[in-house]
Length: 404
Image 1 (cartoon, rainbow, N blue to C red):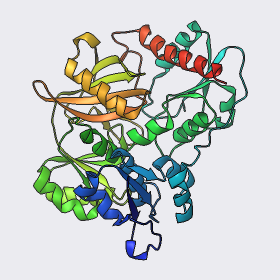
Image 2: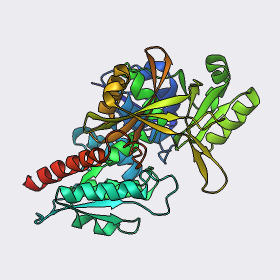
Image 3: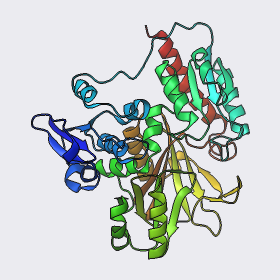
């Protein structure tokens, strides 16, 4: 095992480990040699460990690269920057994730469904929530809808199903962390939220495992000048935590590119630039528990290049959703979706793909907490879709109760 100590300014770092390389944070983040390194443990001693700052990305990309970071990004997010002594202790023993023993539960299985009624573009519409609840009752699961103020009640449930849009700096991540620490079955779990909610992580992870993505650059402020000669125009800039077509812009001139990149870099030390691939629709393959669940075509909004077009306030326009029988979906797309989902976990994922030429695919996104709306994603399976999701909860929650 090789070691690298990563610091914002190595000249000011007095912490040493014999045989370990001392690496500037920027070099670790953007230099190809570190991206391609193998059998590496990264000791992250950056001062800039706030959300989406360079130290945060050191731990995040170390995980995506298969390096072994101390602290890991979840520990960093939850506990903040550790002092060097605690990092050294962590070399011998990983920090506990805060998991606590639960008192045994009896009676019927109980599932909390987290949904803020004021959420714009919710992950499931009201009709879909009712269908989830009906499917749960058929499986002897008691459900209750809870809101952002109910985090203290999680101990009264066996599972948590998040149907709000998930973000790291958000109550959904806090609920997922609290529920996982209390031993609940959680979809989607906190690690999936951390991984899928950062496009920098996905931009490192997918190519490393040989999965096709659009032409992509991970860019800091010094790398803006490399976007145009590499990707050309138009191209797409993405804020790392963008979602629902927000925080994603298509730029068509050098001036627009520079201005948009500078604006995004005020919020994050790294952003993602990708080639623009125009298509009439994106494929969405829904993956649950490591198996394909549904397939859809998400058509672009007429006259727009995305599947969602946002207007002022909370208003938005959505392109048509066309459900497709799984056996009629392109086998290559389903296979790529399964491979991508396995890199994230065993939760519920929506993998978006584009067919750029006959039989040639690019993975665009891996989404945790994918949409399930009555009348859209359930267009082929109908009520069976909701039953499949609740069956996974029933099996996992029952198995957790049996554990000592």
